[in-house]
Length: 167
Figure 1 (cartoon, helix red, strand yellow):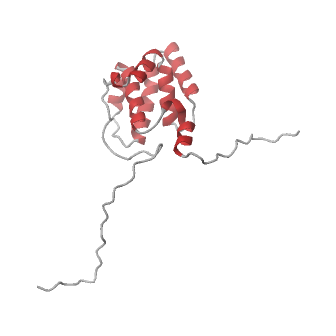
Figure 2 (cartoon, helix red, strand yellow):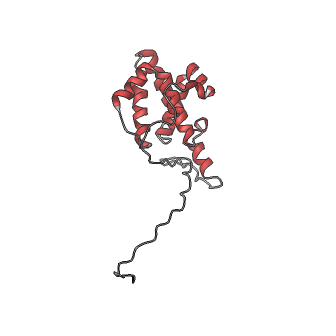
Figure 3 (cartoon, helix red, strand yellow):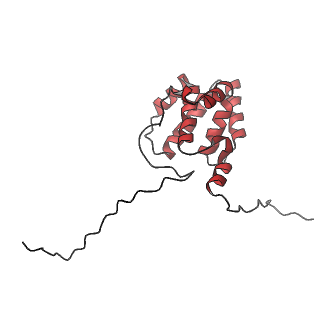
């Protein structure tokens, strides 16, 4: 048999492996969290931190999810105020679970997210903390520290105060 030529080029497909994402670059994969809701004891340090100071855990998560636009201190303080004044901090923290899932390409389920934060607030915070660690973040460094860790040796421009001033 002779080979028939149609004149339409067929591109060769390459199956080279893709490099892993760097810190701060999220893989767009659908699915669920890499650990279960009740796997708190798999990371004792984040479990203890959340048990004794949930405001710090939440603040660190919020800073990473907001990509540095709010600080850990600001988010943690607001979480603490909501806890002390209203007891409805779980509604606030639930919104960050939804934001995190959207950024990671996970399916959103508002009812399940609200239930997990209302019934198991500390477990939900631990799970989010572990997920961000699994994605390559060091939450103790904050957003800026993770960006510097991702891009070592790149000089960041100095912060210039806004407004006019006379000297």
